[in-house]
Every structure is written in C-alpha cells, then in structure tokens.
Length: 342
Image 1 (cartoon, rainbow, N blue to C red):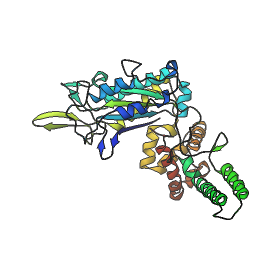
Image 2: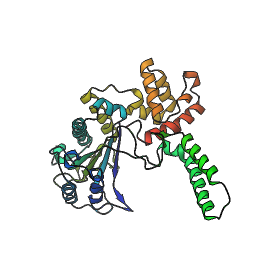
Image 3: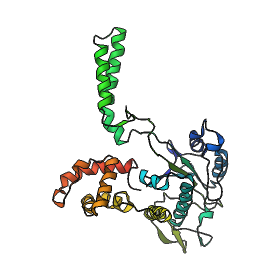
Image 4: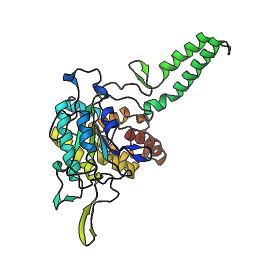
C-alpha cells in the first residue's frame, strides 16, 4: 500500500477551484458506456458527477485565502499483492475507502463545538481508477533512458540522410535501432518501456478529494498541518491541534489487513519503511531474520519493485555499509514509485 496526501497547487498559489482536478479524474469514463463507468462516491452515496463535486467543494471554502489549500488530494495505491487478494473487487475498494476515511478523521487532534470530529464532519469524494502509465521517475523508464537516447539519435541521423545533409546507411541504423529496442532492460509485451506507456496488469487505485473546511464550513481541517498533535493554551483556552500522519498510515494498513484478513509481509509493511529510512542496516538485518518462506516472498517483492536482488546480502557478515548504500538507492526508488511502503 502506498498512500500520499497533497495539496493541489497552481503556480505559486493553490488551486482556487476543484474543477480541473475533478474533470481530470473523469478521463477514464470517456467513450465508456454508462453501465461500466466509475462514479465518484463518498460515505453516503455511490453516483456523484464531477459537477456535484465542483459545486460542493468549491462552495465550502469560507475565509480561506489564496495562499491556503482549498482541498487536499489523497491517493491510495494498493499493491499488486493486495489487489490480487481483493480480486480487484470494486465493492471491496469502496469498502476500504470508506473505512480509510474514518481513519483519516480519527487522526486529527481536533474538536468541533467541543466534540471529536467524525466522518460526518468532513466533505470528501472518491473515485476508483483502473489504469496507470509509466512516469519519468519510474525505475523502468530511468534504466531504459540510455537506450532511448541512442535510438532518438539514430532516428535523427536517418532523417538527415534522407534529406541528403548527412552521409550514412539508413539500413544499418535501422538494424541498430531494432537491437537497442530489444536489448533495453525493461520490456512490456515485447516493447521497450517508455514514459507514458500504459502499465500492464492490475493497476486499480483510488483518488480522494477532501475539503479543507469541515462540513459546516466553519472549521479548517488540514492534514498538512505544521503542528504535531498537541494541546495548547490559546487566549486562556485549551485548544487541540494537529494531524498525526504516522497514526493515519499505521491505521490505514491495519484496517486493510483486518478487514480483508490479509497477511502482510515485512517488506511491504509501513513499519519496515520507517525502519529502512532510519536504519537501513537494521532493515536488511530484519529481512534476513524472517522465516525462510517469508524471506523468499520479501525478496520477490523487492525484486519486482526494481531492487537489485543479486546484491542483497545473504548473511549478517555481508551487511557492509558499502552494500547497504548501493541497495538503499534501489529501495528509495521503489518506495517513491509506490512499489512498496505506504
């Protein structure tokens, strides 16, 4: 599971309307019959249109300035293993989203009119998307880039040869292009992986739009709060403030595992990501300490995420700092690309 929370920006300011984002999330419905379209949903309904979202979120921004986010985007990316466990069920993805948003609310250290906030105190809309495309930050695109550069150069040479401004053999260049295409390290369905290519396999994920203001349009609820969870005295009154991201990510994972009886491997756990960030040597040491079957699964997961498995130490003696630094780069990329972690 990989979850991200971000405010939608437009230049130096934040987006003043959710319109562009809501319409963007409708892209997969283009050319699809009504019965097969994915609709926006929330805790109370299943079929909201982009216009419904725009009207509701844009009208819920009282007293917010241009320099303040009007809404936040939460992206929930279940792993291939989690989606396989769910059999890519639309109903299960919706069930999880609704449970996740309860975890989101409970991670605020806030009160509204003296009461802890509940799911009914927020405005949000979610939408399931079924496809993904390779980005420039994906390890497959990065490692294929040297081949892409050479191919582009050869194609440019061929155009010059055709125009008569360069001498050379088009046939020879074409042969080299074919070899480069087939020798690129990352292929999908017999083709070199490039930026913008649609990813094969199950790619279901969830986009959630959540209003900065509460449902009454009176209180501001920011998951990007600079304050840690705390109680402070303001004008002689004890005020609760802050959003606990660590608690949210932990609850999100626990909710998935409990709801769907999912046995999570160490390599895909939020806890392991935290250990990796703070102490990479302990991370790999913990991998080595897993039971044989679980360790094999962990290495398989890391391999599919692009980590060089051949370089992973097989015993404690090999846990040298040089080896760890090399592997850390691979795991860093895997985490950033949403392959592992939360």
